Picture 1 (tube, rainbow, N blue to C red):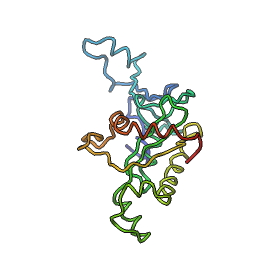
Picture 2 (picture 1 turned 180 degrees about the horizontal axis):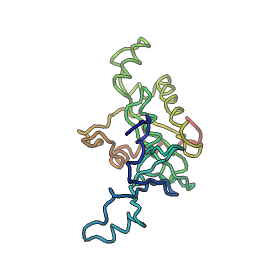
Picture 3 (picture 1 turned 45 degrees about the horizontal axis):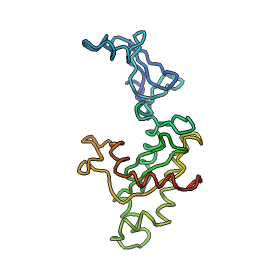
Amino acid sequence: PLNPRPGTVGLPVPGTAVRIADDDEVLIKGGIVFNAYWNDPAATDAVLTDDWFATGDLGALDEDGYLTITGRKKDILITSGGKNVSPAVLEDRLRSRPPVGQCIVVGDKRPYVAALITLDREDVDHWLHVRAMPADTPMSELVRDPGMRADVQKAVDYANQAVSRAESIREFVLVEGEFTEENRLLTPSQKVKRHAVTRAYADAIEALYGRENSSS
């Protein structure tokens, strides 16, 4: 697009209108939107209202009309207190800070938001080198190391800057493994399979909510 703005999708293409619904879903209208699903009026009615197409994406428009995508509606978490949380906002910011590798944010039907976090191998190697620690220090030790947890807490604090207190990560756990295609926790496009991860690490997630309701 002309005059691109980093961090945004850009402006709507000519002939297309974009607006944000009350629940933050991105709606589009214009010639690029299809008329109906073939022989499926129920599916059509579910996504088209007065020619506005419900994309399933969550987003925001700035004062100049630039669109930012913040997550997927199907991934929204609703805490037991009724707060809607878009995990993508937190997860993207977490992954942008070392030594975080992969992560998922949890909290659906729970009293607060928490995170399951893996460590990036290259970041770990650098972390060990800077501290003159053995390069073969087991990951089982690192996930419990107070210094490592303190550095991950900085990443959590950075992620929390983008959301309200009610949406912020209150607890996190570091896990030894990685999310990969081989263990079926990542898709071929390297997206985390949220439900597969929550099943694989169910015990770790349950332990997060067995702690006192205080910040890490």
